[in-house]
Amino acid sequence: RRRTSDSECFSWEILPVLSEEECQGVELLPAYAAPILCKKETSRLVKEVSAIYPLPGLQHLKRVRACKEEPRQHDVEILICLASPLQKEESALSLRELLPTVKAECSSLGEPFVVQVPARPPLTRPQFRESSAHWPTSFHENKLVTKALDGQLFSWEEKNRMQKYMDQAIQAAKCGAAIGMEAVGAVVVNSSTGAVIAVGHDCRQGCNPLLHASIVGIDLVSHAQGGGVYNYDIYPDCKFFLSPNNNECAEIDAVDSPAGTHPTAVGLPYICTGFDLYVTREPCTMCAMALLHSRIQRVFYGTPSPDGALGSKYRIHSRRDLNHHFDVFRGILEDQCQELGNECHQVS
Amino acid sequence: AMHFLSNNNFCHSPILALELKWLSCVLLDQAKEAMEQGEVPVGCLMVYREQIVGQGRNEVNETKNATRHAEMVAIDQVLDWCQRHSEKTTDVFEHTTLYVTVEPCIMCAAALRLLKIPLVIYGCRNDRFGGCGSVLNIATDYLPNTGTPFECIGGYRAEEAVEMLKTFYKQENPNAPKSKARKKD
Ligand SMILES: [Zn+2]
Ligand SMILES: [Zn+2]
Image 1: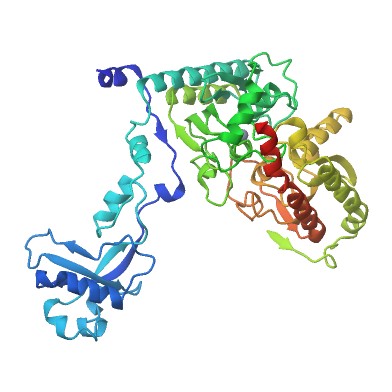
Image 2: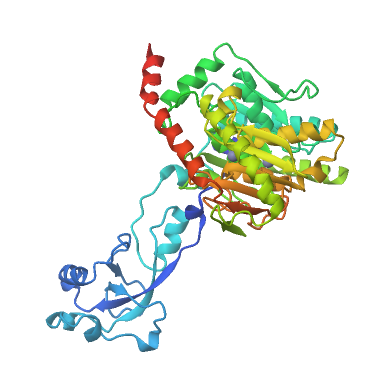
């Protein structure tokens, strides 16, 4: 029943912004394989070939594959070893050269040929599909990633809430644009209570050219927690909301966060722990790293930006060499968010 | 281009040599002050036409704002200075050198690019967050919509900067479990 109303209600689609590793195409390596002429010999051959060529670092590759291509002269093929990157099909090594010690068994193996095998284990279902077309691999599926890629991660109710938050960000962006700022808006939400903590817009034409919407959003959260740097008296559409236990919540969240990996160190204000940011366009590098320093939980942006750091130019949120990672999704009210940009360029 | 130079051949221009003599004292004092306040010990100075127009140290705890790195604090001071002296901010930033005890992080490096600061001179590398080559290279990457690339010179009095960071993280760690216990009370 819900399914049909889903597509009726939302004009947009929410997509995960995955890591570099999850997005890239499948890298291939040339390898030698050979037909197994006598199927009954398969398990013995696997054992012997694996002992000679253990394929370190390529545990994701299956040793044998069933042959499906017609006309079929044999049922199974075995992966022997990697070939040199420059190996040409015409000059492929012979079975005797590849497996000089497996003399007696050679009769059960056909002449080797060169195949392309996936260099890395597949991380997503699309990568798995692409990899399998070359050589079968194992796949440890992350069900959440698959769901996200299929657009099935969020319920109708969740999407409805997300749309409201993004709409609030769009309204803030318009207010900012009306006083000469870039049309970008941001809303910070406590993801466990759904409460809006801060609403703000870009202020870069004011006292500081670095006051992008995300930086404003972070500073408004600081204000809500008794800190803060800039004064927003002249920007009535940049506001924060004090809830009686805001402070307490943030601290408890920080210590007991399910991620548990970054408990609050002495005094370090990981102020956005447990919070989500809705921002009309993809944050730049400065903003993306500011969100990382603040330990944001998730970022939802409407439309990509040219040097954007959460998917376009970099994927700051998913770098293994940085100490905090967060989830990023794009596409909520994408058309409306993109329109904001167009209007802005017409003005300036 | 990024260069690493020893202290001896660091002063390649006479003006720079003079500047550095008195700058370095102020710079490390900033970092020390940060440490005394329980902040990550990083200090920076912004120099425009041989005068300090901004100086800063980390103010993350004080402001409960994780973006208040020394560079961001100093940038605000430069903006104030411009207002007081009726100078155009773009002109000033485009002729300002940043001296900072630790390689700017990715966020600060992007901020410096957006402001078109041409030259950054720093002490030690920032292996965790560095935006001038250590983690990413925001200083020189092709980012046509993010200001202009800037030149980086690293390695100036790096040992002192590293020592301070080491001391800071050493004194921080033993406290962590204590503060957790306190919270449970
Ligand atoms: Zn930004
Ligand atoms: Zn920084």
